[in-house]
Length: 402
Image (cartoon, rainbow, N blue to C red; front, top):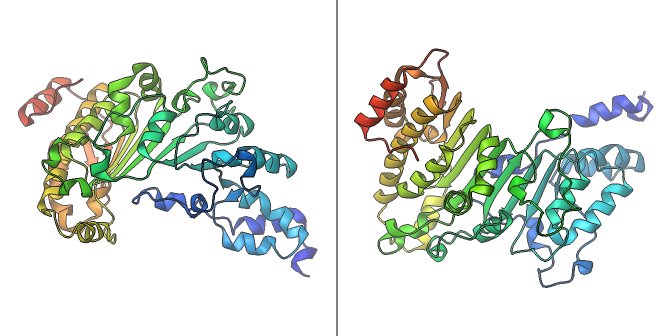
């Protein structure tokens, strides 16, 4: 018996073992950079009708090779190939037409949109068309410059120091429950029929329960005069200072938040933590302030700037930031619903022992550490005395609640 003699359902099941997660699952926690698909697109100045008519899927070489063997295998593999798709605003019309022609609209689970500039001239908004047409999409990734992310949120950039940081791209991931899986998701807001005055922003278009924000590297800013006075380009900082009508609904709905950066300034981390303290429904918090142990970004950026950097400065900023983070975890222990906390920087062997001891000493008996360099803490199932937690925060000089 050959493979083609098997029932179609069984062949499809076999093909499913070739399926892999989206490549962004790995790169989302690394220094953001433009995807290859973005480099192949027409510039924003081109007319949308001139955009490539071929939609893009996240790279899956095994599935793509199999799809080229026959029309039969093409039919079976195409739902897997486009499950995690990449689309540019200029390609949305062609992309949706392609999905409709191949009956794939209900198969798309993850959308990734790489943007190099603003695309606010489309009506309806390009992202609203995607969310309305693809009801099964639960994960929306945007790779864009910081000022573009701010515009998608309907707010103004909070800093004029972007030049000092040279952050060409940042990443934001938004996740929500699939339609029908929760009371909030049963009747998602229709976005396309809204006019410009009533159209919500991307951050309020769905009841997002997970937010991942990767701000990239701040290392270049350390080479500037009085670097500690520079303000980092940041969507979360802009949300904190600009508009409660946009930020508050998002913060209230979040159950999981991950913040990723490479050596941010401690005063910037403090501003991020002020936003995190507003996420009182948060159950899971993950923070990563250092590059991966095998990353060369530190060495690369020092060489890029001809060594004009005190290598101790980034680590000093991190050490202060770690203590501020511990205080925020204590705050959410009492004022929120935080259950799990992950400090990814524990994976760096040189700081592991001191970082673990510092966090454990502050979280004390309210949290248990998984150990073995995991960087994972879990809240103990016991009653918490708010006065004791407050006393610890006061003794350590914890910042006051916002």
